[in-house]
View 1: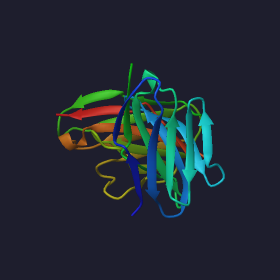
View 2 (view 1 turned 180 degrees about the horizontal axis):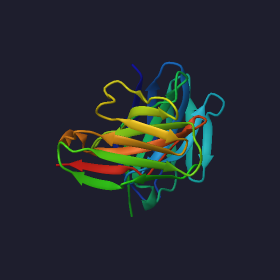
View 3 (view 1 turned 135 degrees about the horizontal axis):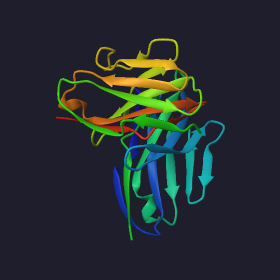
Length: 111
Length: 112
């Protein structure tokens, strides 16, 4: 059975700290790994990582994929209160378009 | 990326009733998906809705409970039928573009 596990489940940091969020997976015929930021209801797309793109960076956010060890990390540097959200990791398989989501990491950045 | 809207954004319903959620996209898309997010849980795929064919449901979800329509390439509806409090969730539609999925704003449903 496909599985996506995120850790930690929750995290509280101070503004300016750097955080690392983890996502490990077991998926048959892995195709891609996606990171989303969920505030209130709608998940917002952050990154997609595949075999041909194992490292992505956008501003203070960056992510890498380790296909050998079957995990990904999402780094956020110089955190701001606006980074407070649930961060979701999702994995897609080559067999279809469905995404298998982890339970998410709830990040709270305090002033 | 596509702009996705959902209606209603939230609703409070009585048990035994049904609610239809609409998902509108500003461009034509082949793949549309419906997800459920129960309180404190992550997203679970309900079904994939392709235009011109019946929706494909994931294990644990059935058409009688969650009928889906996909009349064209920009619109889909999900109905939550004969609701019970266990159906209280956020319902999200998403569209697929290559390997990426983009989500609508979601519908927060509370069943009393």
